[in-house]
Image 1 (cartoon, rainbow, N blue to C red):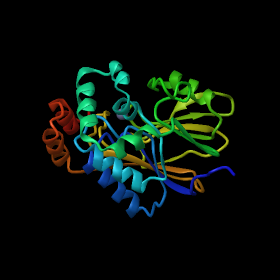
Image 2: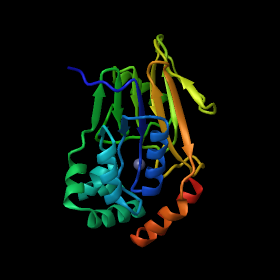
Image 3: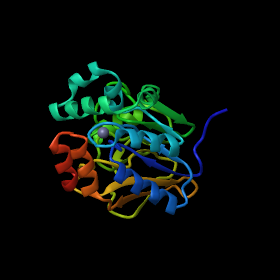
Image 4: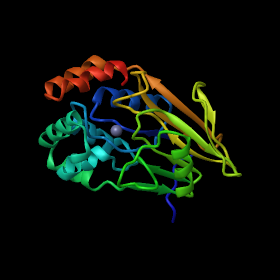
Length: 250
Ligand code: ZN
């Protein structure tokens, strides 16, 4: 039997151990009546509360794929490609988390396929290499690499939506409105933005709700307690830059 998503579900990415942002996003899903939430990876990395975030994501999400920071927490050799502050943060987190959290991170799948929906962290072409989908050409290649109608990814920390029409043309969709129609016969690749470390200049936490019946996608931006998240980063003795960037959304 093919696993499928609920007709209406929440999707979120890049929690990055930011408990305040995660709680805010979960409250949003709850207020929207969302019972099924999917997580696109990078629960670990950068933030001050990896253990609590792993626990909460485990408890509340229907499924989670692995991100590059999740892999790096478990496998030290994977940290070689990280910049110095990202490496320092993941080393610190590796010392902070329980064996149970580590085992859970180690067991995350690279991709979750749910019939016409596919979930992954960075790239369908190279799910373990984590290249970035940064522009139209990247998105077009990705949309050729999987068959599902709707693909969801994270990793860039920037909300985005790409549409591939029946002629094989790929275009970026404008995200300025509150809702997007992402219906057949075209196929779509959607990034809901980052929960715990947005990088599009907007410090608010990001997540998305997709209603398959109406094919309406809604990307939400939510104010959360940034200074409490910064305090947690400092308490955990993470690099200061991880605290500062949260206020700027960079
Ligand atoms: Zn990330």
